[in-house]
Image (tube, rainbow, N blue to C red; front, side, top):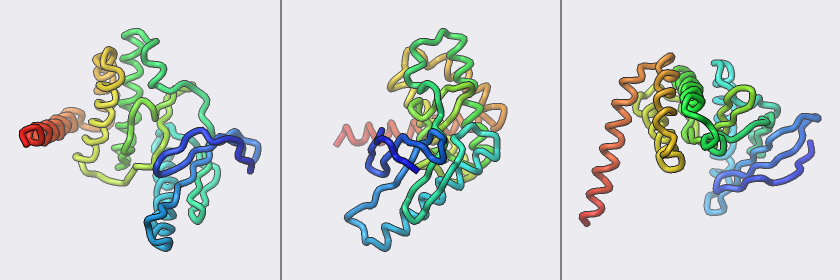
Length: 213
């Protein structure tokens, strides 16, 4: 196992590009928090590493395109997974025509729909965590959890919609049209989007209240 280079560092983890058993791989290692008691920190990071790996495997079992797991070491907070060759959806969107955007939205809707039907919430389904290769893949399950609560499903969809609005506002309409078609193949899209509206209304209420202070 040889780690070649660090490609991303965040508050919770660091990502490396390297090779594992001759396979081009991604190494994800969770970071310890110096302010936490060492025993508590080890327990938290170990359990989160196991949960992330378990949910990735569960997603794969339910037909969701995620990187294949190659190695998991909970004691060292490490997950090794296959490297997915392809383009980040975030970078790809501006180059697509309306029909391709609608098709892309449909594929994204199918991925989230499959996850939610399997009672998995991704936690951060933004266009930065979607890779288009031969097929569409979703990556980074660091915030994922097991749930069957429609509020959690709607929050996941809300995060995705916010990523479109903030980064891809000129292209969001056909993507959302396609998304609803793909998502609706697995769950009641109308009920989930009604819950999304509730979440947005609560958010606006909080923002307005803060402005008045």
